[in-house]
Image (cartoon, rainbow, N blue to C red):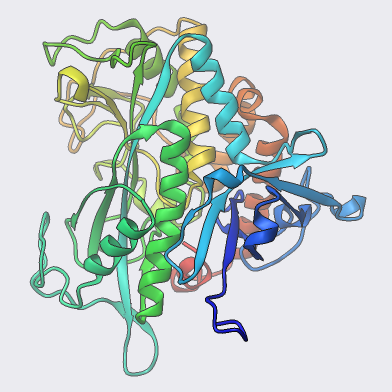
Length: 432
């Protein structure tokens, strides 16, 4: 409260960096109404442990100059924090887009599809585990002894954490589609309602931060790490993709679930599979990702596709009509939704633009046997190699953005090279 007794009014200005950290600052509402703020480009020069390197575009050897966060004050929205509004902005360098801005990269990808008269629509599914403190103050899995897949209610969530997340999301206009317990406990699936690609990315970025902060204030830790608990299921990030035309019609809509003749659908799938190995470097961005990303785990390891088949990377949903969509199943929530969706849209667009041939659909079960031959790299370093060597995709996404990301990630690999699994989990746990 202010000295006069009035509620303090402030705004939280945010952007997602290449590590998917929610960086920004609090400012008075009077400052937020200006629509811009200045920050140091050095935010793009550091690892999770604040190790600074001269990554491309991060300005370390150029005096660490400013970049500008730009946003429309009309887009301020209520936050989950008391007496606070929140907004997500784009980064600028003078009059041009700051080349490391993932949100701007996503806008460029969307624009390519709009030039084709199509609007990308995205629905996002996130998976995460919940931790609580034990008597020694250590983080241990949340006790949910009665939990089961698709579980709801107190046996799956005895402390009512889902209730808190749901209420906070409603208060700040973040559109939940569903929440339920996942296969292993204490794992949850959190699904947001589909929206145009930019809104979907903004919603996912804010929702993830909101949910983690709400639970942390209650003494719990919501972890989106891809494989935090050895011997239990991994946590993924699934993107459901469709396109609407100028009349708002879903161009993937069909009456027969097995009709895969749509040329846009074919081009997008072909592009995603052609650039599968490079996409892994973006969508599976931490060393722990590769404990999850293994064959037989229903995680998008193989470069394959199929109709209503959960063992493939690109699943054509069994829904027809306006619910028809593609589901990309490779990623995990360590990835920035902006960077990830931009990469997927660019890969799909390359498939359309270059008329890539669509491989035959997966004919095997995908668990014990597969017909696909190409698969994801086995570690983060190899995935970064694949990303760097795929010049068509890196140039489409943004060559400086990719170069900066790769430099930060290669340093991350060096820092963790001699660490045990437990030490690697501890390195990431409070950030992902």
